[in-house]
Length: 329
Image (spheres, rainbow, N blue to C red):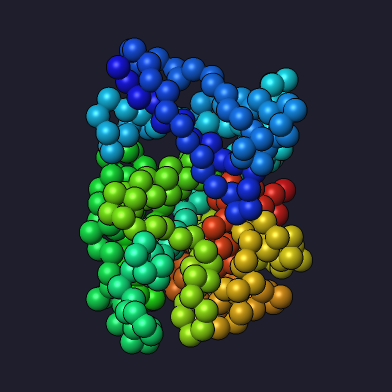
């Protein structure tokens, strides 16, 4: 017997990943079958016509269990049209509409906060009060190393394009990096990596929060900084294309903010390595900018840009779709 863990995105805000298990006799190299679910329970249909369709798009090995695979799905209506919440298909259609192959690469820096179930506070925080101010925790003495390391190894075993992990600025806060590669596959990988992290944290009786400002006050928020490039940006003289891309992004700032995740105004205040949510600016090595050009890119005259605006709870398909649509159309 083989267990298939079907994953899909719901219609909530922020978008959540839902899953359920199908048991099949023999799987092997077979395609995962189309399945369905009750969309009235996921904000994707009303009770009078609640059937939604799950169409598998990628299958991953499931390192958490034996005889198990992870089946990532797109959501369709029963008339075989993409559901309005199917942001993966939106990204696909945007790429298909381009006149040429841009060979876009995307990389995600996913920040998250681990919460203690018993205290309802970030992992390692004292009761009462707060820990010493941030400063020692980034790539240093943080809490949650066991979970972060287990997640890294599980993602590698699942074939996810994870390329690193580190402790973050706030106690109990961590980050992992996905990519770089094609925007659809990297976005797939991020959603599956999020699901795996939740399962691992659950085993350790810890909760994962993707809220962009989990703790108010003088503490860093949590983002999903997104690195983006096209083939032209990565070639000699690509810095000119990066400059052109930034010029295209500025007039679309508000449109992008609306797609980059809820509650982002609590994080993008102009403090704690952010630019104010109502302001657009870029800079070299500037972590207080909307768009950062890394110093290596500036030195080499080619590479990529970092969009620092997406929230930790963003939908990566939507982030990539906005970047492709704005920069490459």
